[in-house]
Length: 334
Image 1 (cartoon, rainbow, N blue to C red):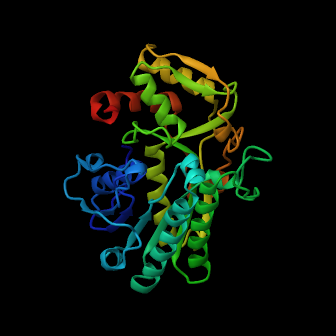
Image 2 (image 1 turned 90 degrees about the vertical axis):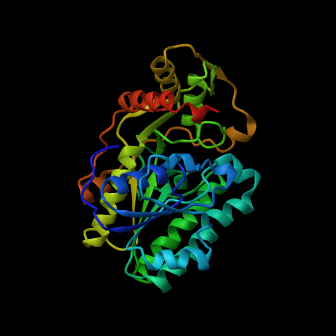
């Protein structure tokens, strides 16, 4: 984990706190001295795991959907800093079960925001959104003024959830901000499911010595963000809302300027794991080709200007540290 500021005694609530980003954030907040409560329903398809918080010393864990008023309402009342990371992230599963995706990424968050409005309207709320809301880019790099035309149900549902946070900021006066994250990787990401993003699939297959399957020619470009950079920007955004450096209801892109082809990403992962795996290029499965977005590069200049934030972890460095983590914690591959 990267360096953190002084959060001693701050009361923080992290939704989705046993998942990938949520658990890294919860541990970073605890390291900074915060009093941390995590809420997570541990929905099997999502990849959350109690073992992600095995290094925690005093993090309270609550098993619940974020819409459960009798459970979550009292937690909101006692939390001044809320990091809303919960959600369904699989683009493919959103197409096979769209109503479930809508429920988890939109209705759950609307119910949660209503609780915040009633129980603790002074709380700071930072929500994790996704670059998937843009769909197939018309131009790159993609800035916040790019049209939002999602290619899948997940992008639509996540955009709805983001708009709820924006409306509760601009209309109801809640101190909200939403961060549209690019592809995130790093420790504590679920490696035994194939629908949670291509990066954990590549890492998992390389660590097992299996072939990494790259669909198409592998020339589609991505920017990949290490989870330490994500936890840092979440905390810095919360500070910025609390001190009125950004407006209520703001939304920002979060990415890197390091653009890499998917094929090169696979090759770097193979090389870092020692080369027992190999990369194979295959035709696109029809159901995935229909929702592919082509090239994507993030313009995060608005965020940099507002917060002075820049990503610190280079991809080669981040992948090396990530591979080392999973080799030391082999249960992620089981």
